[in-house]
Length: 536
Image (cartoon, rainbow, N blue to C red; front, side, top):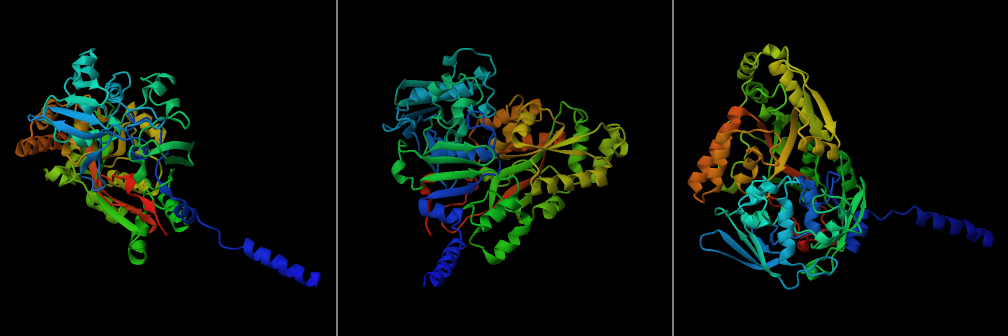
């Protein structure tokens, strides 16, 4: 009898062992652990120096500003401030911090924390790329540019632990939107002071075990090039509404691999979707497919201080040689819209002039006029890319072909790992760069600020007085017609000088598993983590 039963027992155990494995999505849904693709491995988790939209998603889970934007992408909601007052002239904002505002270590979060954090952003020695977003604040630009050494010259005060006052040079109706994003998150100064100081860019204080934050989650684990884990913060003021126990962010260099991981049950949400899979999901899984026109412009940046792009005729030739309709059709399909202006049409209710066109004949004429007929005599040209994902390479190859066909010019492509790309961009060690800018507020100002002389995000190095004057004019008035005229003037200067050349606007394609509840698409890609939960 034992000899008969033993083979049956072995077979039964083997059958159990060969059963279907539970997927990461299934266990995550059961345990309220969200698995999400995040495209890039973060260079750092210091919110004041972040210039990457993908890292910004992680930062929204860890930190919270004075106010937040709801996941409709428009509505301003209370954050660390439960209420605020605006003076009749629009120049003074008084924020009242909530009594239960706490750091993740349980210590009270005060107005002094915001004052110290905002002054850190404006410290010239930190070199915060997004410091220009603070320029509406009285005296902020003068302090950042070193014309004043006195912190009291900046229009910010903390008269008591729960009151924070901001004074402006001019009305800025977009200010609350700016204050909701990562350049204006508070950071825990004792941790910085103990780990290299406040002027250090990132560093040990941003690592697990050291990072003290104030958002819905805390940093639990960071395995480079594998995942970042954040777990529910019990000291968050609205912790009762946070239903996810953990979020895991996965860097994903290749969108095809990411899509396979989604099908295999390894991801609840992807960061991207290959163009070749759009029709497949439209036909078979339309509820999982999301294609969202977002406020993001993708463009070429010409380094105006590096030959041959010191000559505007060469820059214009390269831009005129680009057939944007063909570029998008061949490489992006429904995931892009051809861009003929830097600002996406409709942003903030504005439709601006479109000055960028396809005219290869004019491009060849300008190149010859600059002394390089048919490309002859041009120095070697390096084309710098962020990574080697399929769509990035496809775009670069299509541009290479257009420049060869329309100008007789050959360029060499240099894909860089994300951290190296950011360093190359910041130090302006490139000739021509392919990059993109995701707006943080739905206003043309956000995009057009990149062309202002000396702006930390002006990667081109461009400096044109008429552009600066137009930006100043747009920033000093609330009149819609006057702002439209100023925005059009800036677009016209760029179309004339071509320090930036728009390529396309992003229609973000990605996948969301049906178990993810509370997800809302919006043009700013805001995620309100309090709204998300998982259900079978």
